[in-house]
Image (spheres, one colour):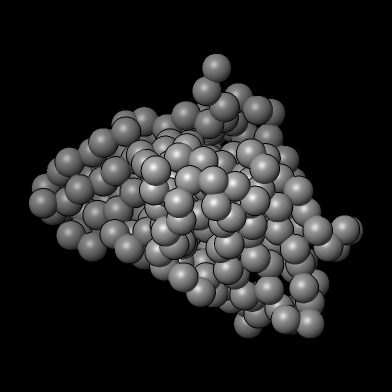
Length: 112
Length: 113
């Protein structure tokens, strides 16, 4: 069973479109995250939620809106996609903050 | 400010020889330090974690890392490389229960037969 699963794995879309990436964890963790990995493989945190409450919002444009319907899910909606949004987006979860993160396998977003 | 610097972007070793991946950090707090591995088209997997207990930390797959406060380093080592170790390795730091993980730039490990 996949611990942290995110869909879709690949997402190709045009500039200006709106898209969503879904993430689910079955580990019973209370904290979930979104990370962005750019073309140089640099990883940076975007958001974290603890028990559905936003904890970290790392100066991400407000075109990005995370939504956590329950503590097992953290979805990422992106409005008005731009070329610079092309990256691999990773969802992760942990039990408590500062603890070991479990990562999903990533969503490769390509904006044309 | 908190930061992580991985000193080598690319390391190449022969199978069966030792591996050394270097990581230096800067932190105003007592940090927790991590090494993660990323195989192609996969998510990151934790290799090991340091949290102010023993300075020599043993991880999975034969990897270990030593925390040296005086040198602000947390280098990753393995006595004998396997072909399956070829991957991208990330050193990371967190602090004060912020839940925020700061990653280094990554080191690509190539293992030659």
